[in-house]
Image 1 (cartoon, one colour):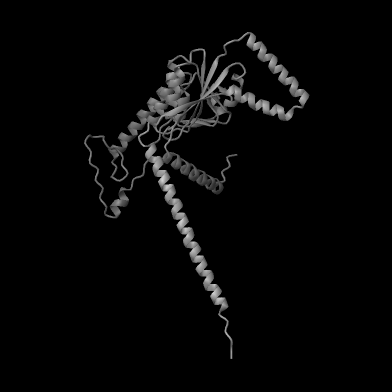
Image 2 (cartoon, one colour):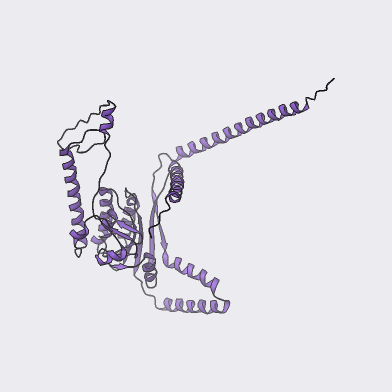
Length: 354
């Protein structure tokens, strides 16, 4: 006789049943949590719907920022006796300033970080409108500009915002730490003074347009695509239709006209430029751009503002638009995806320019 022991099978069956019940419990919990999140998001969307989407202007006095940073460094580096001497000297300087108060010139700092659509113009227009209500010819506006260019009409609008400052007779300085090319330089050239970091990229005074055409691919697969227009030049080049030589000539003519307007705009604000020599679409680093008179001085924005803070009141202006819950969630997701893609692209390419 052989004895059989079914205990392991019993234990195995019980373990599987336990896992199945636990998985079902987790599924119910996840479902409830997701349902609660959906309800909360829907309620927030309903509450925000119909509300007026405004914005707010944030003003930071950069003198206080510089002073706080310097104070923290002094506390870490100096001993008690040295720190006591420094604080005593500061108090004496404050007392002297209080006895004979003098109005300092003001410097208003605005940032413009441009993408292909010049999206930052939505904030820039409010910042410019606000500071024009208080700034005078004795003050100064500094724009920290970073842009590789983009759509002509978008950067035309952004440039017009800066032109308002010049027209009001307020000194305008533009600092370029990284890049101001194409539409970015269209904005920069408006300034009374352009400062550039030694290795910033400037120039690219030209116009480019490109689009694919899949007409032959569609024709190969017997797919017709009709383009109906009214007006001889309503449509010059298309993606799906058949492009003609006449359409290409008209498109090239439009590009050339835009380039001439671009050149005229730059020449108007910087007449010292040999415009035909530099309006070739080329770019130059800061040191070479100084020789071409594209910039007036090699200096970073940090150095310039730190110097200004010694004898001026420096204010940083930033207008931020209120965003709905959906916009905030979407923006966070977009930024996360951008960071992941950029990280992987950097690892794959490992670009080294020097």
